[in-house]
Image (cartoon, rainbow over all chains, first blue to last red):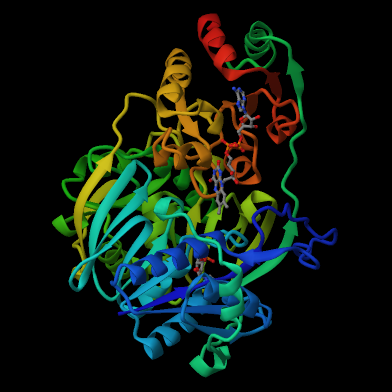
Length: 249
Length: 309
Ligand SMILES: Cc1cc2nc3c(=O)[nH]c(=O)nc-3n(C[C@H](O)[C@H](O)[C@H](O)COP(=O)(O)OP(=O)(O)OC[C@H]3O[C@@H](n4cnc5c(N)ncnc54)[C@H](O)[C@@H]3O)c2cc1C
Ligand SMILES: Nc1ncnc2c1ncn2[C@@H]1O[C@H](COP(=O)(O)O)[C@@H](O)[C@H]1O
């Protein structure tokens, strides 16, 4: 079977972003960009399924600016076989991303789509669930373990009280959580090889998707800050302050 | 505005996440109906009926709804959606799983994890691990919203809504439940606790985590949290993770022990009323948000703290 892995180019998780002074958004010029960390986990899972003989082909797809090609090349260097870049300079909301991914899935016919649980820029946690709804497929979100069976998969999910295991019919959409695996690094020879791997270019219009936003962003502001307090010298002083000053004990 | 609020419950008990999301729902519109979907869930429905501000409870009791599987639950919500202007849920693992599915089926953009209701169509929500707050206005006729419960007080009791039964929608039959491995504990839940003590990578093993963190938690009647590093290393279970991609909490007192204070961790606890950090590195970023910082080895400080309480 074929595996489809959507990946998003986002501000690197180590960067502490800055809000623009005029409230119009977040400063993105000259900021380090990387693959969304959950998508690295998805690529890794797809590669492991391929290595275990459960899948033949790993196709990665990104919806984003021309530079998202770099992110796709990273996935190809990790070991993915092919890439699709759906190029747009617009900010695309999860619903429109899901609609485009539906088009890609219909063209590629994967047995499983492995989506990240959450993009660390918009923190939406929506796309996988939306894609699964649009395709009319089963969904298994927040996966910490995926076992492929015959026409179905058993997925262990990280839920509020612990873990839940469900069985989903294939094809299905899985979203990946932090404990699923530890992604590999691309080796230098593989980074070179990735430059020659096939990459298709498309546009949202090729899938007939209107990407105009449904949510109007009126303002982007800094969160109310917190100031560093005091250092206490001992446990006794800490307990005393918590009782008398803070009144929380 | 009629609002459908999806209840968070385990059939027998309604979680207080529902009471907090109800506060947000009540700020969006005044006619709030609570949907309790489950199997043998009448008890939870009766608790929902007592919440102040609920005008009606809908109880959908069916075997297909026993385990919160996304497809039958989304089908049920969509079958009811016609009568509502907004569909709201707490951003629990159930809400985050099912509401985007509902939104897509209704062709609506979801507004995730709101922290403030500005007006019936405008909301504030954190992005970039809470390092920026966006004000967004939904242009969809129907709204689909999840609520970050740490930002809203729980609605009180005093209501006496009627409980009406509704039937489950046809189960698409795409998934089946295999098993739950849920942690049972007498400690308060992270999302409702007044005091939380969390441990990080510095704990070094699950034995040490239990040996030094839990006795203090017991003394304080606190819930226990952990950093991602501690969970990844197996010192603490996954559902204890606090942060951008774990639970978001805002207790009266949060005690971070051997946690450096990465932005992803801060995202989950920086709205706590009082923050205490115990770390042996005086440069650790956690001290920048701590009201009280103690530069010390936690293996000395925590046993001492336990005795002093
Ligand atoms: C996509 C993504 C999502 C993430 N989501 C989360 C999340 O939700 N929650 C989260 O917590 N992290 C999250 N992280 C991870 C985060 O970036 C940090 O790696 C993590 O929080 C570090 O955990 P830590 O503070 O326990 O470990 P470290 O950063 O290793 O810090 C350990 C601290 O312990 C101190 N220490 C060591 N020994 C002692 C001692 N004996 N006594 C006292 N202090 C001691 C050290 O000085 C140090 O400050 C995420 C990362 C990514 C990429
Ligand atoms: N522009 C995009 N291109 C490709 N995949 C995306 C894009 N946006 C979101 N995704 C996928 O959806 C996941 C969840 O994103 P979100 O719903 O925005 O939190 C990400 O981890 C990606 O796998």
